[in-house]
Image 1: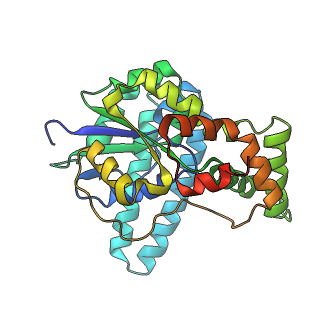
Image 2: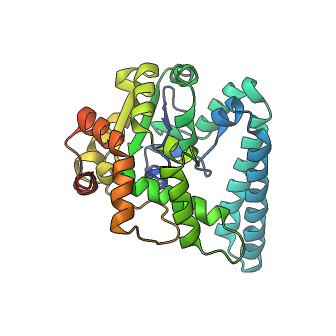
Length: 298
């Protein structure tokens, strides 16, 4: 194991390109990323969310075993081995979660196990963005070199992507995703419901909390729209201390069902999210073109 590897913790935002970031780092020769993107250690412990998380990992494990059985029948030995690594990682994460608050050392060992001469290991769990300032401060000092990454996607695009994801998960048999998504959007913006959706995109609240909890030189805040290309990619790699590896293809977030907002809905969403646009422009401007186009609707 490398004598002084760094640890990267990506705390979100939800639906802001963290899956693209995971794929980039997973394939990077300087990075050591485990086969499971989101470990959910700290949020499971702090929010006492064990029952839900154990259920999620049980379903994931069953799915992996099923896919492994199919790969074995097709004599796809590479896929069998790859799926076994994921199964083993799920088992280890569950073991660590069962340790509760006493599992931090095991969590760190899990991240670093097998790192060899690589420079950085990481955990990309957007749910960590909801942790308390105190917990984030503890995480920032749990090892000699802990670096935090937070990605900000255009607020309207992020909100609508999150709504579509929730609609797909919540819809009942026979219910159209489009109708479900519009109902969730309405409850979120006009009725103060589905509060977890805007909370995950509260850039002002999360970034200011991170600034208070994390040393300035250990925090990277970037725009999703350019962080994996051009100047954004250079800045990210420099922050992580890794070489700049070209992106093989245009990154994209997990969009799920493709549904478009009407002009009226986009205008209403931009107004609802006006404080986020104002905060980011003041703190990190100039804004990417996509942000400016939606902000013009306010």
